Image (cartoon, rainbow, N blue to C red; front, side):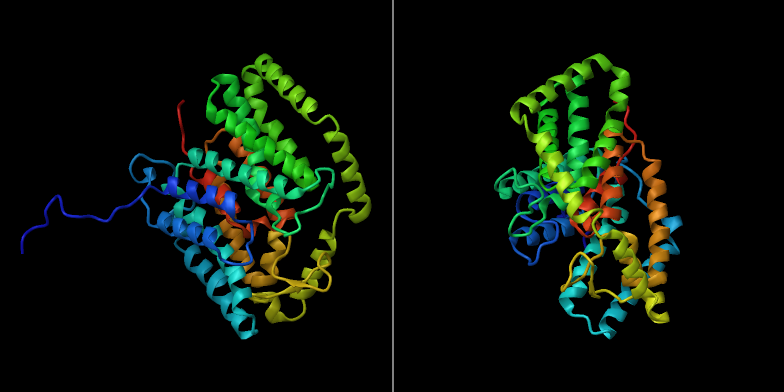
Length: 393
């Protein structure tokens, strides 16, 4: 036996960040938040994610961020999560007779949410955030193109792709505008212009579909994200913001008035939607018997929501309600423990204010008001901040 030659073939390990960036662009340009079938965009994205899971990353040597949950912290949590969020709900779903398709609709998003835990140490979060923003901009442009008459406020496209419901769109709205303005005020670059364009497209898409909560929370987050730049150079930022406002006003002089009218009409029609009634319904479901209270309906369980009369669906709008209905108290407790560890990592992450603000707004909206937590976009947004690292520039 001869010793292995230094030039012997070795497995090629591609960096994770470009693979995830390409996945974000493909998802934004050709897929949807929750596709009904697997076509070539979904297959390509799945392949890119699998490659990213086996990829190398700058975090292995130079440090692009530490793992989202340290091994020592997760020694007891990982087995508990596999059991309480994986095997147990799966077994309950099978025993309750849920269909394979419905079970997969719950398990696949669970795999997405595990990506920040697995890949955070291999990802350059700052670079990934830019590409996630571009992907959100593509989703927004597609939503605008499918919208038809721009004055048909609140009308989702006829094919019900709900593109503007993706977490990547709200992320792009906040991060794209805040980071674009911040960068342009310092050193004008093409990337900053593209970020700003993606952010403005995202705001238009959110407005056209009357995403009230996203617009309000996103607006507050945008102000927070611009605060450090305002403190550093208020005059330049004010001049730039005034010019941008004038351009928007000249391009769409009646846009704000029409949007406000649409919001008033929607609020008069649906009020605050049916979130309170949905919470009461979730309580009734889990309190039906002791087994359901402890382990839930299992993956694949369907429920008829007040907002979907006559149609049983696999989602709830709020992540806590979704977990308690699907996994019961056992799974919810484990998920809360993992969430607290992720929150600790997230709150202590040294990252730019625009990124921090965008992730905060996205989590608030898509874990409480909208079921965006079930989409790939939520995992990519979380990876953007979990992969951040200190930087001196």
